Image (cartoon, rainbow, N blue to C red; front, side):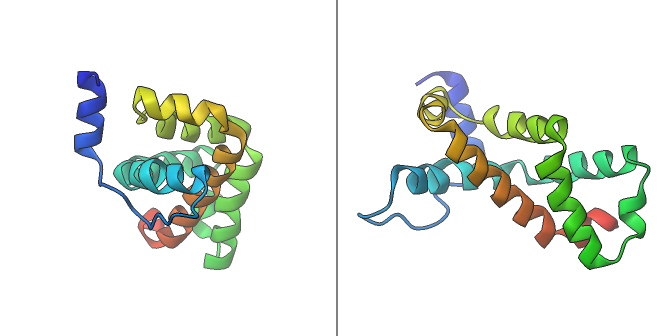
Length: 130
């Protein structure tokens, strides 16, 4: 394992979620890699979303809470550039071996990553609007 990989693993939280004998490879990757990376990068995601909302004329901040939740979801689902930037923030925190596992099933893992990130941002909408 390289110094980079060791450093990354030492910075982020350990396993988040349960792994059962019947867990799929995707579930295992989600709980051993994606969840810890999302937690580790949380502050960066909030700042990235705030910056995105400001660049989109700041209308997000004047919306009602239910509309803000929809805005978060739409921004990530529909704005390919923003979504790719967020994916890069996640993938950039993978170790080399995690990246190798990720590329074997990137399409399904991307869906999981983005859905988890959307829920994470929605759960913290009050931090975003402060």
